[in-house]
Length: 309
Image (cartoon, rainbow, N blue to C red; front, side):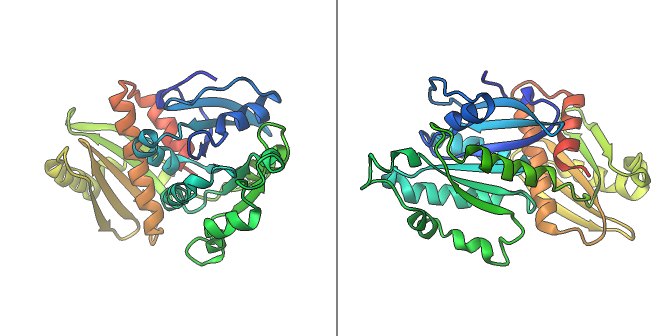
């Protein structure tokens, strides 16, 4: 795999691998995509593997597990992911609480329909490291995985698999489950359209109608007034969210880093889902802009692939 910034994502949905450094994420990707284990080095930033499954293309994004990357890029990629693979090294007892903390951060960042797979990795070492290798029961208890039966988390499809990325044990089964859930989760989006406004250009740089009824919605008087009002308040140092209730739609306005993201939704769309979408889109815009890769056509398909119907 070659290291690629977010600007090198290919058209297709994204599945993200997360976990502490040395958990075995890159080995898992190599085992599943190539059937062989190549000599791996610590992932610096992220790697992207492009895969095709059942005729659909996916970005398989392997994120670096070191703390600087957890702090800077994990949230952006978690929020735009259609599915997440969290990899945990069952012999890494010294960092269990650290892994637990970051696992639940990831869960909170995810869109409500994103399936999650927890890969308890390195089961091939249980015989060699009996004292340090955690049992399935210990993992479930330490990570409080029973919480996925609660109302707050039940919307996530969740499975735990004990795997060995090195030998391939249970790798195929775990990936089949996750990608099957992602492919089968094409629910109708409640988002009708998305608009991005740039304070630097003082204009709309992207307008995407997801349904015919909101074509050229920026020209509608009520929407134009909302855009104009919020553009005058735009402050690069602040992140804000505004909500406007309309007769036949709802309008959410998110501001961050010199950009506005206006999201038009059906009435009574789920607030938290819209909030995550708005923040995710602006995070993607900010990352692309900082990389010098803010290409409108690319941004358009990233938004449509990740957040459209």
